[in-house]
Image 1 (tube, helix red, strand yellow):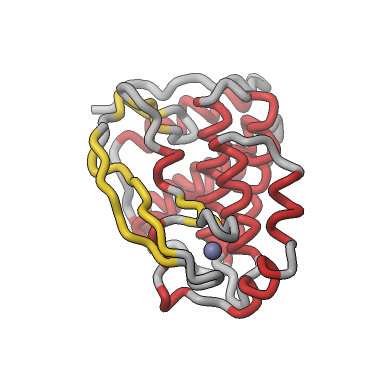
Image 2: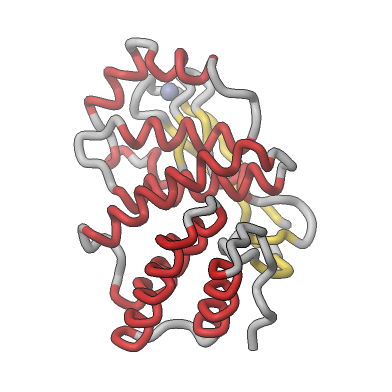
Length: 224
Ligand SMILES: [Zn+2]
């Protein structure tokens, strides 16, 4: 993995600092929940930045001045974020949880952005061998991704994959009936809007596991 430095300025407290983010990195595959399997170093922790002044946490885009939000600012300055940060461990996955909490305070909340943060938290937990905390993040990711699909935040060409992903998260959580319904729905979305070729094979494989009542994180059949 190679990284680059970026200059950031916090729109909450005015702190200026230098962040580091991945310039390029290699993955050797993805799990059935699309969790990237990094070739060497895990890039996920470097995709978030935390202001050293106030603790505000988010991806690089979140720090743009255009993203300033008065509700978030008031919450952070009133100590809400510091309180939340005291209750989570110092880990990569918990930083994604804090980023989600910061986003959730916005006047306009994006369900898709929340889903992305919680999904990355669940991936990070797995990559950090903290599998016991992954389910709570998978449940949050599934809930917000379902919402994002419902309110049309997901582009047509992404709908089949995202519907599959909600189904796979439900299967991992042991909610097999819901998973099977979502896999069927994903197949319909694939017919309507298309999708990557690996998806149909994944749908068949993961539906088979759901029918067996298996919540195991089985790897995807190799894609062509
Ligand atoms: Zn700050």
